Length: 102
Image (cartoon, rainbow, N blue to C red; front, side, top):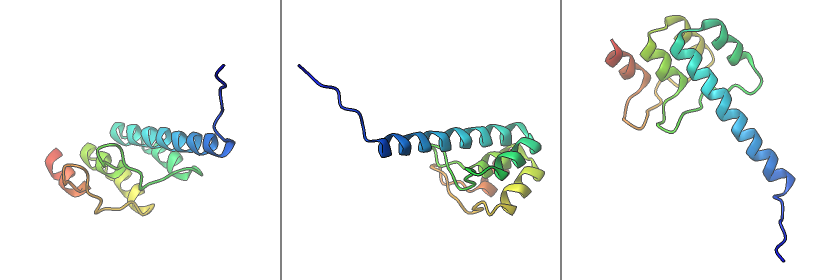
């Protein structure tokens, strides 16, 4: 007979926190792409906001805001100390992404 063991509570909590951070980063990125300044501001003011988070391709919210050309959102991210020199998996910084986007 096989018994089912559950992971320790600390492991479950850590996994849940990591997943929540990923979801918040996705929400921030979507708001940056759509140019939703109010939503970006609200997410950045939230307790779990991580302006330095990157996706699987190494792209930050600042990369996406730069691509969409939203000066207001770029300003908010930089004011929250977003890394302007972060390099994604393709070797692009947010400035290079903005230049490519036109």
